[in-house]
Image (cartoon, rainbow, N blue to C red; front, side, top):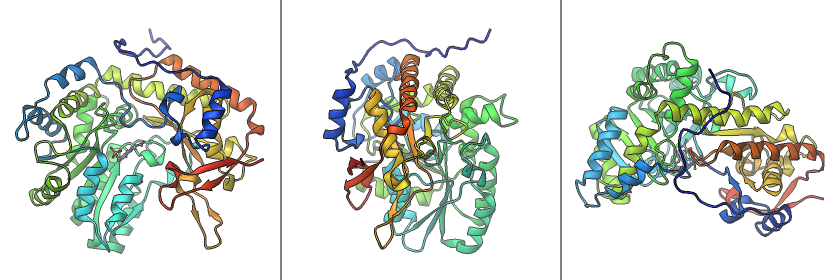
Length: 458
Ligand code: F0G
């Protein structure tokens, strides 16, 4: 018997109250936050889909492990537990603990980068790109062409375009400092990459002596899609699939705030000793000593336990099917989303939803505000507010898409929370032609989406 209801494979032992609010109250909160939900207080939010990063609920076993934290400066038991777990998963010899993903990026890309160097990826995540560009190097995105069709059901839109990769290798040769496969591809709709693609990219990199790096922060979710949709993987466990993918790479950067099911942490793993020695120097200077880096002993314990829990078949099935449930429900109401639904988030096409709002009036921001005002749901715009640029006359050069991401924290919300969000969409769809666009009234020079102020356009 296959039941339709997705049940959470856990019981709730500790609860955190959500403060309910009325639409009038939320409109006032939104005005006070200059119509930028990043500036809201979390107490003003009912369902927080801003990010899946660092927002997981830890298990009873993780909390118990935290009590075992050994806070010794050097050679702590917690370090041994952490190192053993990470090296068993990744198969890599050198493990560098960092306080979060971008610290691992800063160390690796800061060392490998510099002016004249190039990094190539399916899509660089913002902090990845920022660390690369900060070093003086250039970041080039080459997702497969199928990724451009947001609504097709091609299962591996997170793949790297291997033809383009070979062309770029001819063009930039030894100035290519690394090829980064981000699994799943967060900035590309949370879409998975196939093992076949990882194998091809790995072989091309090997042939040309280029470092192949996995950005593996959602690798358990990616493994689920491989087992489901790629031939030849049905017999393997999710962890074995992840191990096979790590085996293809020379290095991995991890934000543990995602698939390690913790609130803070990260690591960098490497195979090559010379590279590991250089990165270790930077680790000690900027993060901490080699056996804790940016982490306390208890953090390392929680990560070690989380990295095993995340590959649990019941957990992963619940995780992916509940994200898909939200996406499919919204889609069934005629709202365009990036399809197929990815692992950690649903990406809504706000331009298609609000066709009366021109791109220079930020339809994505309009949807983010509408979701909050109508139902207290916080989401994030990933369109022209986040990625738009100006030309010499201060006209907007829009981003390629006007998307809104609903990122789902792990093990935090229940089926009824998700059903509630679907109802919020019903309300928005009913009144969609009355929704207004926005103008920016204040913006900083960099990363404006975090702190910009907006005003609705009458
Ligand atoms: N790589 C990817 C693919 C990410 O999604 C993130 C973070 C990072 C690296 C950086 O990790 O935050 O631990 O420093 N993504 C979060 C998000 C912030 O909301 O998608 P970090």
